[in-house]
Length: 159
Image (cartoon, rainbow, N blue to C red):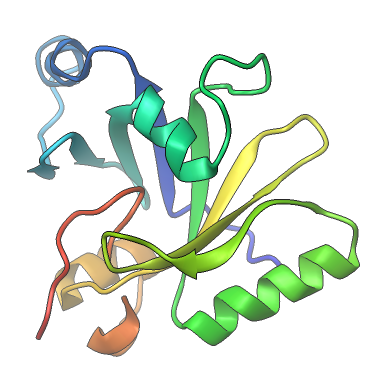
């Protein structure tokens, strides 16, 4: 069963500095982490990330210029590769559109994408996290060998 929760919301942006400064200065939010061309804000029970829209489209495996790309994805973090694979098998059996089958990512995680009937993308992924980040996302601790925070790579963390 697809867990009824949101772990991560990623907004594809054209100007990362402009958008980061908007959330910092106009909304008054505190930056959780900035790693290369992605920034993260901790919200109430999930994380908002800002990532260049061209890179987000590339990660999904679609063209950024098509009418199907909405520049936003939601993500569900799962505790193991087996959980990611099992959920993809279950969703495929229910005729859910698989946009990108799960695979190892260049940033060290494991993820794939599915879409709802209106082409809203969900990223299902495994991440390697420090215990304090795991508590924020999962509200309980999974073993540290779980995985990386994604929507696109905080850091590949090793304990």
